[in-house]
Image 1 (cartoon, one colour):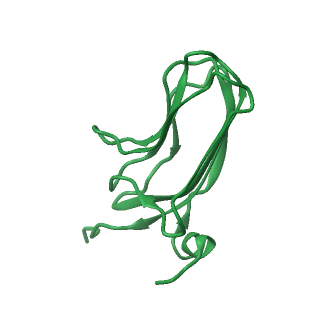
Image 2 (tube, rainbow, N blue to C red):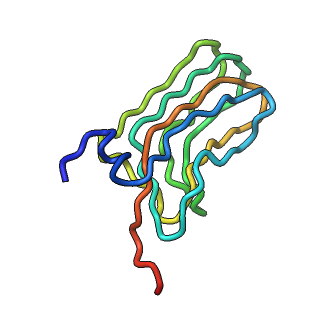
Length: 126
């Protein structure tokens, strides 16, 4: 199947969105996966708008040993931004696991934006 970024999100379920991170935001589930599905992350953009020294953020899945999608990156400088592009097909998370923002400690603020989709990857019981 040769689809572009939007093609995958139209064919499967689009899970793209953004989160305004405040100084009190802690670990947060960005996307909750459906049963028997896998989330594929295509792009992630992180913008730090309120710095907080010594803090880090990373994008992971919710597995016991998480897949690290992006980061950790420091939130020491206002205006810092981090981008990752995994291509139109995207990179898969662990099947059945959520997409998370993992915050080392509260204090920093910014915006996290992601593009991706989820698709059925396991056989559903009848």
